[in-house]
Length: 338
Image (cartoon, rainbow, N blue to C red; front, side, top):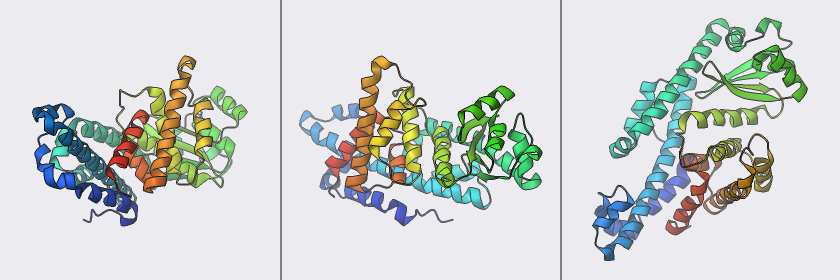
């Protein structure tokens, strides 16, 4: 089986990886720090060498981060392809990881990998169940398996279902059909009708579901909502990051996944003013606004100066708290010659 990455998607990362690997400092001294797993290990070296060793260690971390990002792109490509062809299993993914990640990295991140794989497998099992229902009995049977107050036979118009490894998307021709599908009771249905909602994303019995009203933006909305579900599946929460900022980070990556241009100032305004995102205490308003603004500025710098694609940025930063994005930018600025 061919595990090679798509050259178009990973060429930039490859260039940066090679730049780090060819750095003269690494060539002369890289072997010195094979035993360094954390900054405190630098203290074992003589004082006069610690500055040099620290710089080498930071280069090593950057190289590892770029390699892992490139691996994420290949893993996602593999998962999507297998899922669409003949289905993918946990065994397939574990095999891919073993064949494409260094044993030392797997050992160091074993607990996190196990957690991600367990979460992914649980959700994939639900998605596969519904896909099997759709294949064997039709889309109406899949609708009825997820709906609580309506049945497909009573819908006003047609609908389609799009399956991905991360979510199940029901796309409706009729707005009221979508309201009936997502509502848990009659009261919720009436509230949705008053609010004029055009889409909803949620979990029902563990199934990650997107309900979308079909229009000219459907493909963009699909990418956006699928990225939300992907983020919730494969990202371990960093407990050093506030939950409000995790929510913001999730939304930023969903916007990037749309794969179209965006105005940073408009996105900033949406994030700090939207009732779905601005959930922090008002006395901390300045902290959150400054953190979000700095994060968006960092993304723009990385796109502009290093020509990263939106997918590159998602893979590079999806595990990083927003407050750390600027640190990664500084590592790039210090290490790369563009």
